[in-house]
Image 1 (cartoon, rainbow, N blue to C red):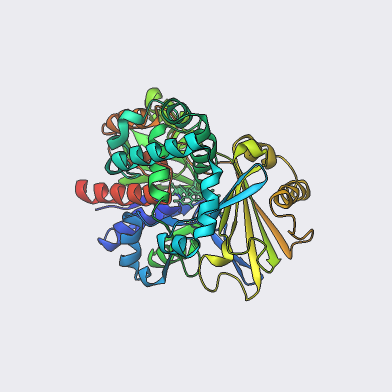
Image 2 (cartoon, rainbow, N blue to C red):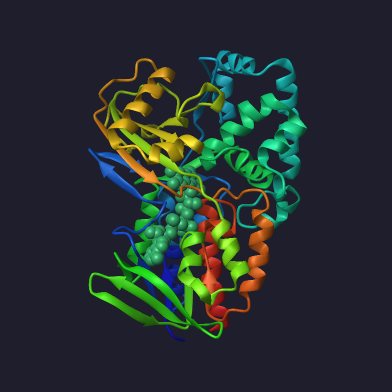
Length: 445
Ligand SMILES: Cc1cc2nc3c(=O)[nH]c(=O)nc-3n(C[C@H](O)[C@H](O)[C@H](O)COP(=O)(O)OP(=O)(O)OC[C@H]3O[C@@H](n4cnc5c(N)ncnc54)[C@H](O)[C@@H]3O)c2cc1C
């Protein structure tokens, strides 16, 4: 069996390469950035662990935990069911994901009940029952199960079935905090799946989400950072290799198989004329949210006991929510310090990408102080990371289009795609598609 070239060292590419090497296959991973992990990238600033991309794993994930088991890092998983707040008309209503905690704080829970009108509460129950009924069909790894919800936006679906209040104070905050897009931009399939996945709780790794990327990278023999694939070389529908460019110039690495684990439009660019225009069109049409992700180190815990405050769009803030990451796991921050993250979203996410650091910081800080008036004017540090493509929006019609494309790709020998967009936008889907691509390489070799 010849070499497999994996393009992209994000969750999907790393999972593919790890699966190949565990099975004894040779592979080379090409990564254009100077770091591996893609959107599961983490770093440490002033003793604080910063999850720069993905923030948590949902406890319902499967493939992600399976790969952690194989890597021997499952013992470092920390599960948490936090207190979260929701801002409505200048009040923060607090709810807990943990039923035991809820009983310990009956007053708080009672107050949370006032967040919705009487009709809203009834409709929230109806929404919850629908979610439970759909549960088995809501699967990031197998989006086809929810095909009946593919063609309608989460916004239209929620408004039509549960009314405007549920759209604005449940669906939109869930959609925007988790996809960084708007409920109009994602399908009902993805919106309901996000709500289904977040319900039972969250998890991280002791050293942050980036620990997964580091553990995978350590196990893979040949990860070439700072090496950009410029073209997938195809002849008569068959993969021949990958053209790369690095500090030494350009070369072609010959390969029998290529796993292309980049963003969808990047995959279309790398395949160029080698791909049927309809299939290329599907890849180019895949949409992502944008986010200027702002992380601030602070003294103390300005959010008190809360992990997150979701800020519905009607409140007019530039972020979908803020989180206190220091409470995710012991050791995330030095004693007495906090790490506040703000996630710009939707049109604000796109607008803030174009602004310089000082302007982004001032805008976000001002909005945080509208939610938490005691928030300091001078954080200990501010880090800003711009994600022009943050999360695959899995918009209306996405699942059907991607399924058609997958069928069309069967005609291409040695070509395998991986990446979150082949499932529903998440680390879980990225890892699942990476593992599946590798298993296919192993099967057909
Ligand atoms: C701010 C933020 C918060 C998020 N929160 C969560 C969360 O809490 N939970 C969750 O499950 N998901 C979350 N996500 C989404 C999640 O991070 C992604 O779905 C997932 O990591 C995507 O993995 P991937 O491998 O498909 O793509 P990527 O991680 O983007 O990997 C693609 C890689 O390919 C490389 N590449 C591209 N072109 C080339 C080329 N020509 N040559 C070589 N290399 C190339 C890129 O540099 C990149 O490293 C979040 C994302 C962001 C940005």
